[in-house]
Length: 308
Image 1 (cartoon, rainbow, N blue to C red):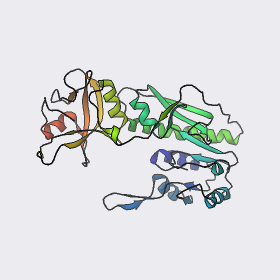
Image 2: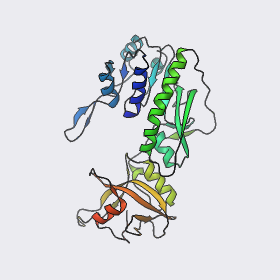
Image 3: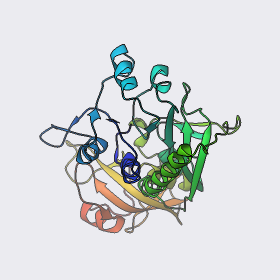
Image 4: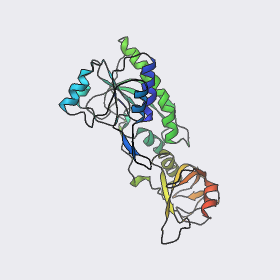
């Protein structure tokens, strides 16, 4: 049970290990692209390629959904970023319950956006865990974990890509242990619970008044999606108003000035304390990514410009 590309390596691992995958549950195809054609999720496309029956129910709370799910006769359900709540009837249906691969070191960062929030908070370490699901939000006991460092400047996208194969391997080992009746669970600690709330569009705008370290972490934590942004006049005229510019990578740098002031042609911007160097930028609605220096030169933004 999964939807985005983060779940695909786990699906591949379970298939390669020879398990009988009786069904793949995923979100229904959504409109995408300029033509707004229906596009199946990455899990949907991969499951079909592997010959696995795909189901895309709008809800799992109906009696029909519960009957269909129980009818698979599954020993265990593996859940990876599925994106839908599982009611108790679903949680109880498989013989060994539902195992979730979660992208954090629980109980830190329960919830929807653990990878982004870890980078935004300046965590120095993250990981994945295999948890037995229960009714609470990511509250179930944990069987196995694997850890990775988060070096300064790492983006959420890079952390996501590091956790994908790590999680697939971890879940593969967990299912093998389950087969041998060797998978044990430990309740999560009551201390250190932090919630990774869904990223809102409002918080994507860069607040230059914050300390430089926080601004850089905010930018890197929202890269590549949804992308932190600022607004600036890029030469279209006052009647067009400022344009949005997404910043996809930044690091703290030397410098000071009024927050939001461009300090040099290399892309150094003053913050509430210190400054950040803008390393990768993209004009909103445009596909290409440019270095800070190249972008500013093309946009004709000079030192002293104010970024909103």
